[in-house]
Length: 145
Image (tube, rainbow, N blue to C red; front, side, top):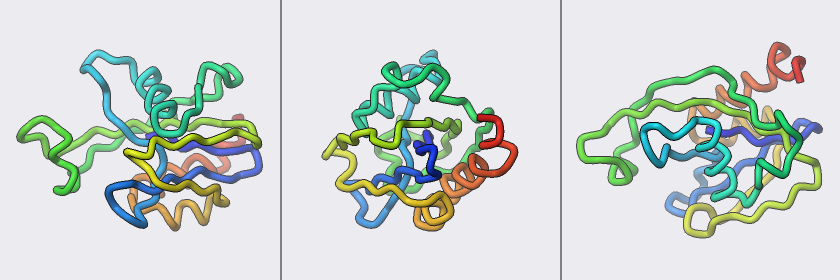
């Protein structure tokens, strides 16, 4: 998962195409078991938002050094290999310019919005997404940027 945010404290949320009113940060999967996590995060950001991490300030993409394991929602298990019911989610953050342009992948997402971080945390459907946003904006995380 990649929490995309601006220096003004706004967080990008994108609405899933396959589930109305399901707002989330960028999520995705490794293309192969040995794919580098940061490269996978950058790839997913580009695929879902059109943001090319390579064009941003070096260090804009940060591995938050946090991961969780959770049960995959039954309606999305068809995206995984047969029998896979759990996922390991790694958290990243991405600081983008205030005037960044978003280009959604219509197959995956139908809308986007920038919200103050507390509102974004309240609106996103995933508890882990909420926790990642709140952790990012805790004094210990943002204060180091």
